[in-house]
Every structure is written in structure tokens, then in C-alpha cells.
Length: 477
Image 1: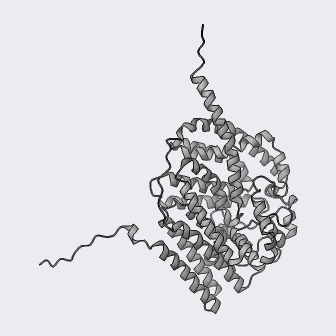
Image 2: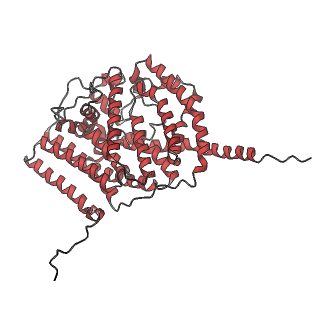
Image 3: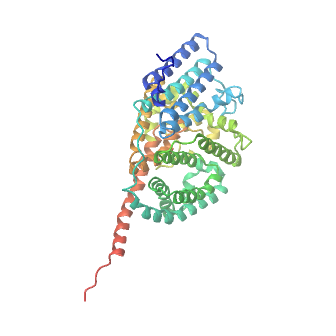
């Protein structure tokens, strides 16, 4: 008889993962116990802040582990939720600020909120994160990279359109910068946008609109890295002028969207250090832009201060706080908010055309400081706040589940190269929802479809011209 201990095979990593149902139930159980302890007075506000930050961080880590190492839009969404709604909570945990719930944005005299209201705010953020993660985690299956066999033929045409439209984009950005330089800089986008747009000839604006969808299509269809790097570099170099004016969210959300596309196209697991380097680079650039922004007082004074950046981006938490405290002021305009959010890509929405009920973020800004708002200063919105106005905590749960289902659908669409183009065009607006509009992505989707129509028609013309050039008519004697 052998006395050697029997050997057992080590189970694969995938088999060690906690089943989705138990994982989600564990998160909900933690929130339920913490809520009961908070109501009973056993859990202080600072303890609840720490638990909320830990929960958000855990969901981000688990979404990375369980959802393909960045191959699911849920990961990026939870990151932006953590930044925009939990940024001040993180800064508080790191000792950068003394009160994460002190509303300081736009107000002359900062004010705090009650303990119960702070608990509702943290509960909404925590439940929203869980309800977004749950549908994405449920029965997750990794999709293969989209095939490029049927789309390679479009690349010569797309390169032609891109190189033809790029000068128009450069000229438009230059005219924008020249106008902004002499009319108040950053605030021009919010108090004089009609005149800003009118400063650029219509044909220039129309042709320049084609550059972005063509860039995204090339990024999705192209597999040769040297061409990819060249096209992306050309596009972002043309955007430097706009970045100098202080506008950055659109550019940075596009970078995240392109990163998602690159992960979908890749069969290799991402290296965490590359993601950390990308995040650090974006923080430094964002701080530099913020420091250069005319009249801005809330940015960190150091370009390499990530804590100040996180705290600054977390001011969107104030929107959720105001929505919780004064829900009755905004609830009558819910349908008006949603309707006008579908028009934001087509209708100018500066302060000169403001009326109550048009935009949720604008109504919040007027409530906080109507005098600053009249000068072109405004805070952004937040889907958590808007969802709470619609249906309270239950509304946050339902809408977050719908968002999670939408992200799951977006991921499923990413298996097809053509659909991935639409996904990449809409995803930047989706990622900005924690500090943006609840239905802003719908307006972006409509705009993307409209912009793709002339590209499809142009493809038919391109095919006709190239066929004539390759096969000229035979002349008969």
C-alpha cells in the first residue's frame, strides 16, 4: 500500500469563480445590511462612504475579471460612474476634502445635506452600480473578434473621404478657436453657441462632420497598425485647438470608446499597466487643460495631482444631491427633459435659449445660481439624479437595470464589424451618462445614422467611378 498522498488536479480559474447569482446576491446583501445599520444609527456617514467606495471599486475589479478584461462596455461605464458620482467620496477617503456631500459647485455659499439624504444618495449610487453590473454578468459569454473579410473593400474609400474631410475639420476648429479667443473662451459654448457655429461656413461644418464617423469606421475595419496609428494621430492633432479652449469630455470619451474597440478586436488579454498608463496620461492632460481654462477656479493646481482631478470630476455628485433634496421641483418636467434630450445633437442648447423644463442640468444650474448661469456657467446632469426624479429609489433600480441590459445588447452587437461602428459612435455619450443625459445616447444614435447615409451613398458613387476607370467603354470602329 502506498503512503503517498493522492494528487488532485487543480481546477481551472473559471471554475473557481463565484456564480453570477450568488455574486450579485452577495452585493445586495452587503447593501441591505449596511442600510439597516445606517438606519439604526450603528453606521456613521463616513463609514458608509468607505463602504460605497469599496463596493464601487469591487464591482470595477470584478467586471474586469468576469467580463473579458475590458472587452465589455460595463467595465468602462462603472469606471466613469466611479469617477463622476464617486469622485468626491474617493477624495474624502484619501483625506483631500472634509465633507464629500458639501455642495460647492456654482453656489455663493456652500451648503450641506442631512444624514438621511446622504444615505439616500449613497444607496442610489450603490444600487445603480449593482443593477448595471448584474445583467452584464448574467450568462456572460465572450464573443469572438468581428471578422473584417466583408469590410476590407471599404477601406480605400474611407481613407479617401477621411483625407478629403480632414482639412475642413482643421479649418472649422481654427475658426472656432479664433472666435472663442475673442468672445469669452470656454463659456462661448454655453452662452453664444449659435454665433459660434455661424462663424464657420455651412459647407465647412457639413463636410467636417464626416471625419468622425469615417475615423471610427477605419478604426473598426483596419487591422494594419501603422495605418491605424497614423489616422488616429491625424484626427487628434486636428482636435488640439479645441482642447486648448477647455473642451475635453468629448475627446476623452472618444478615446475610451476606441480603447473598447481595440479590446474587442484583440484576442489577447490586456495588460493592466497599459490601462494604468493610459488613465494617468488622461489625468495629466485633463489637468493641464483645466489649468489653462480661462477663469476656472476648481481645478487642481498641479497637473500631476490625480486626487484633485478625481475630486473635481466628482462634482456631479452635487446634481444627485439636489435631485434627492428637491425632487418635487423637477418631477413635473420629466417628460420634457427626456424629449429634449433626444434633440441635443440637432438643436442649440445654450443659455440664451433656456426655458424651464428643457434640460435637467440647466434647471439644476438655475436653482443653484441663476446669475452665474446667465453668464454661461452651468453644471452637467447625471442619470442617477434624473432616474431618482423619475421614480425615486425604485426608478433608479429600474432604469439602471435597463442600462445594464442596454450595455449587454451593445456588447452583443460588437461581434459584427458594421454594428461595431455604430456602437463606437454612440458609446462616448453612453460613458458620459453619469454626468450627462439619460437619453443623450439616443440623440447621438440618430445623428450617427444620419451621418452614415451620405457615406453609403458616396460608396455607391465611388464604386461606379472606379468601375468606369477600371473597365472603360470599348470604342468600336
